[in-house]
Image 1 (cartoon, protein in one colour):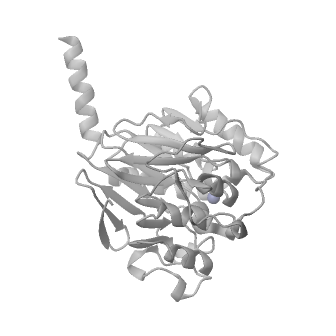
Image 2 (cartoon, rainbow, N blue to C red):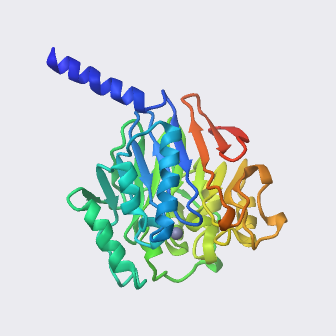
Length: 343
Ligand SMILES: [Zn+2]
């Protein structure tokens, strides 16, 4: 009887936290950093990256708290850190204060060979202070135990999966020797990438994974198959370090969301490369790219934050994935939404 009532309590707890058969994703605006909240149909939740350090951490943790409130969450189960650059892990202590993470997933020890920023060591210590004893180091090929979803780690610490997943494995016609770039030597290249799958819907978030690693995932065979939703790598191919066409065009995302900043990512060539995706149904941007002309920004309805940083309201973009093979993207600023059917 006691076991039964404990079980019932656990089930009720999940039902309250969850949203009945939907996977919900919030691309939180942290102005050119990373913070993506994934809420499984079970109610379990995972934040992928935690925004920036310093004064920005207060701003970013408030926006994470706002998304939690919108989702009806009082805590977030996991923090998943793609890599140790400031705009992905710098906000971890402030985010932990609002999200009370139980477990932490990352690609392993921070190595100053890759993370050369002068404040990298201090950020690492601050991360360890909250994560120590609760960390799980991820390798390509691992899965993350988020109940109700399948979460495959497709890249981590400079390696990518050896075997194809998600129906991938076909020879990739977009592999072009002229597009190959030399190995990247920044911490971005160590990024962990995850493919989140739910009832045929797939979402790829690869942090700031670099062009050379994207090519490893795509050539000579596309190891990832086709995906429904892509978080544009590196905030919309910032400085062209990411966004290898061989991967982008082979995985054929139906919808792309860029977590760009007002002046970070989504240059004109990134916009053009995304528009060449066969079957693209929508491009959404966290920000109007202020240095890019209007012809190379997506339509106004699909931009969450048109202002410069000083006036930014920090609106999120939300994705609701139903159990009926549809998914709807909504702009938190104006409630404009579009529904796609999973191919
Ligand atoms: Zn970044």
